[in-house]
Length: 82
Image (cartoon, rainbow, N blue to C red; front, side, top):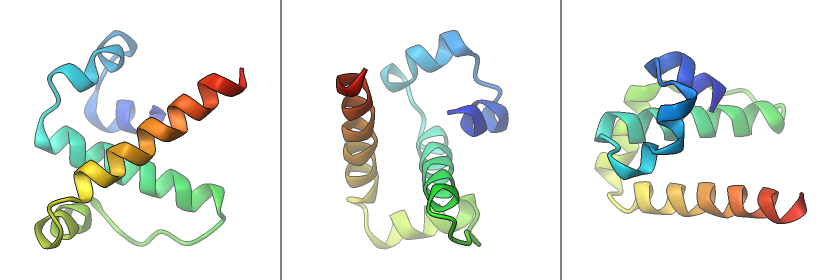
């Protein structure tokens, strides 16, 4: 979320309500940040940019739904572990 906030200028208060009124550009940027952070955690190279994510969505329009399902699962798992 830190990288997404930095890239988009989104405040903490806005992050709380992000899903309520998210634009396509915000969704793509959030996916990019999530994929990039996942690669960082896995210590894997990440050679993609936001345009690559948009291209992937053009190729598979279910990708947004799949990615946000994973994000939701990750956030709910972290909440359950606290």
